[in-house]
Length: 539
Ligand code: GLN
Image (cartoon, rainbow, N blue to C red):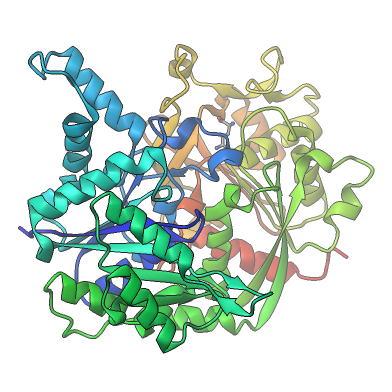
């Protein structure tokens, strides 16, 4: 049984400073020193989970093995640490309030007035310690979403303040991530926003132990001293986090700055074991020294916001490094693809990926992209809605079922080749009701999928309502679209492939969610390989 120590990561000055990456990088360093570490994120919004949020609002929704719809930072945690997260790794204000209100309705507060302090803060503290109390971890890193000073973050900062008292100073460390802006007109880096942001934390009763300062330019020693003096931290605890080319360099930058050592010394833990980062460095070397390049078109409708396809982009980075190949992913807006411009839009690409998504908008462009890939023998990878599109396109253009569609887009179609499962038809609530989380899948021998995974039994994560309609299976297979992955429990089709094609694979699940630095996803690795073999033939 391990007794966990706690690191809290807060953010100041602005959002988007990369708390998730700093937390994941610290966790990586501690893990590489032999500690068992996990990271959790507390988000101050009132949605119970981000599952009902539009990707434009909050980027991609990351799904865990146990089927929780979570913040995309959990994806970074998994990609860096190579261990799965769970429902308990992401908590929102909505979930906290939901629990407290349910307790109140059950009469558990015995007639007391239910208040932010202590009832909400107690529930936050309970959840902050859930993973730590499992006995599995030496260190639990807790990232607090939002920026210090926001009204919504107050109960979280207050909970951190109380936990420092409950657990003792040697069992807790607070890292505050801030920005040191460079004013080009003055030619100077400015520390004032950081001073103010630390003051704000102090007003709320929390003295940060460590400051991680995001900056475009190096901090001179006098500047570090000045920040230390004004913010009441040790000069060694002022950590520079300079802009780097890729997020995967951040652990090495943090190592150089000794962030891990400073944290371990605050927690009174040994830093004797040097971190073993060999495989991480190998990955970075391959990433930064590619021997070839491929161009991949990512056809989707949320292309204005790169975070909407975060895990897919990262999976391309992992799979590219595995192939020693730079993957140049270009977004193609599915709404703007038409029959007359498709050649122009998609020529020059070595592979085409049709992205996941919901709703009717942009669907016809996706279908055209599938058709183009199928007819021109361009390596094709369809993910979730992308797989469903490949089935619809095949039914329409090969089987000749002109009105074939998904009942999500056309509930009246006579040929719903993608349809709602019976158990989904009764569901009216939108939150947390899709087919979510990990499901088993059996692969057909010698299929592209089987060759990629190198085994026949796999597990992948899902997030969708609609499914391949088995009524069309025989006709599809006879015409050349094979079901090469089946859910052993339900018989649902999870993978389709076209045999007579260089590489055409559609998957109902989300392989991108399981790709990590240490384990690049085999389907991405093989798709990139197929694209590089195909290179140049789609001029
Ligand atoms: N909209 C489709 C469904 O619900 C696909 C979802 C997805 O691509 N994640 O089945």
